[in-house]
Length: 62
Image 1 (cartoon, one colour):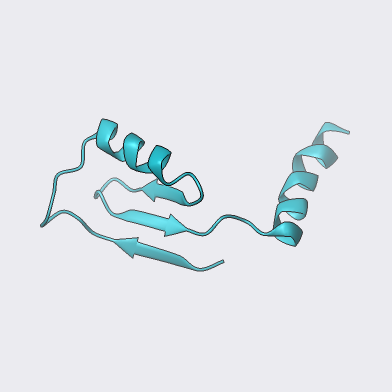
Image 2: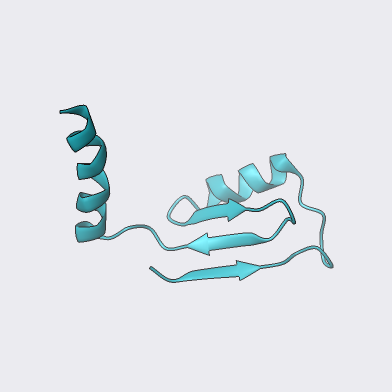
């Protein structure tokens, strides 16, 4: 899975609410923000990766 990390520090001070709205308006992407304010944009999981990710909690539950 490819990820893109961008730093907005020199451009805008993104509040928690603005970050939340960014995530909501782009629900097809997965955003993460670290303590330094850098935002990592990750593509959603595909079929095979999604199935593997879903099987881990299932195996633990069983």
